[in-house]
Length: 214
Image (cartoon, rainbow, N blue to C red; front, side):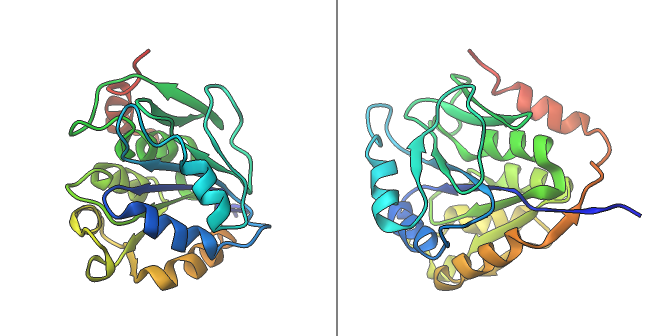
């Protein structure tokens, strides 16, 4: 029988309307939150540097701009820096200048795909307000690898494109209004997940290779 391990990593994506959604979500998490949080917000190449400070003021978890090669530690929020994709590989944060996705770098799909490969069932992905469909391919990868997908209810989102795309790309998303997402995330991150890794996934490797730039 497989032993169970906790879901120890959370990846979050947001775009238009996302700062307000992130504030509400992260303010609901307790200071002893037992998972690492990696976060992508679509920002201009020269902007977004104040986001960690905004998140620190909004919630009870420390936040910082991610740096290449650092470990992803529980109870900490790692924010993708402007103009770099943030990836999770072997428990380590990597930054990439790989191709933009719909004009965005950072983008959600590279983070979600890399984390799905690294963490499998121990991963939770969260999609908040945003336009277009970034995160949908990544959510499908997370679910395929046994992870859990939480989505802000499109009817509750300032911009519903990203939530609707994530819902359409997955079979069993947990769709909740923003006010309920924080409690659900805290509950689910403490739930056991299978320790055994899924079978190799060549399609996931192909998708990830696209974003492994310099």
